[in-house]
Length: 484
Image 1 (spheres, rainbow, N blue to C red):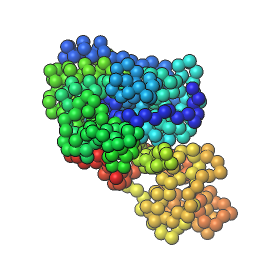
Image 2 (image 1 turned 120 degrees about the vertical axis):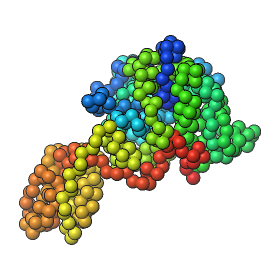
Image 3 (image 1 turned 90 degrees about the vertical axis):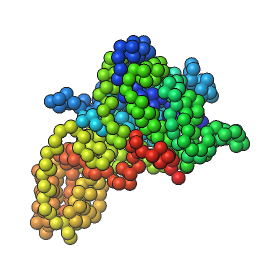
Image 4 (image 1 turned 120 degrees about the horizontal axis):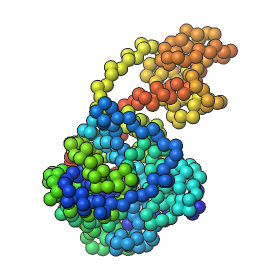
């Protein structure tokens, strides 16, 4: 296929697919009968396509605890039984309509799912194609095109995993892919999920090309939905809120919350979970690390102690860029930095360790001192982070731009003879920085790689405007169901 500039065909029947299936399987724990059922169903994908340049794996503490990142992908392929549920207009090629990165914190008491908009523009790294060749890097490509690289019915989960790792700086420990036949079977196996339909949905909302309103598909209010009705709920875009894909993701998060709540509420026992797990894994493809029932259930058991209030969902910060979506920087970078630091969205230390007392920041008053900030590295947004840091101590930032060269290992503070004292004050905020007198007027701060390590190791608190969008699994089912 052409790997640059090609956009997958867009289907009007996109939906959450089986992300709910994945999450349901993740919270199961049972005995031998369930093991036999699951083991016969599970399929795995080849890990040969994973990038050779991956983020480092997290290290376990003395108790063997470490964070776990699980990539949950919903495939909208119309092959096999899927075509009966979603139609076959989009063809058999597997595409990802929903992707959630689930970060389980080392304390095993908190988890957060980050939804990545399908139309967001990201950098897709090299990916292995079916013919054995590797695709070139694709800057500013549509995110869900990573899964369709190679044009196969099963999709390319390794390519999506590579893309997520490049975007987040987090190593993905496990990847799970589910198609919508598994989603439908799973919702029937649990006898439906109770969700809130924000307003009555008609046939014309499900298919805008119909040309008329049509019959009622979903009645407004609290409804118990399974099978096709559940699919309709999580895939509908038009007629609700702002009619957008990202708005639809909020209802998908609400559905997942309701599913988790039901599974946990009915008890973690084989009688409840056997039909669910059997239905789920029939359409589940996982990495080899979860390729047996023993591995899958062992992982599930490690999660069942997380309270609903501590399971949160949020959408990666975004904005419209024409017909596509751009992720908002530095907000999205700060979000993933929080996860890398094992801090919750609210800034709670969830590493399972007692956090050391922070070193008191030096008392520096930059009032009346003007500084021009330059990013001397290839780390995006580092100059802005440094500007925010010094502005907090009342320095006046006269500009933030990229330095002439981006190979500075050590931060430099350049100053004219009249500003030596002010330069020394600024240097207190950047331990180890080089003080460089020049024939200039004013002060230049050129941040180097040493500051990049500090800035990423101590992420700043996320803005309330972002964290307030998060939904916990025990939230009001009728809240936060759309934008607009």
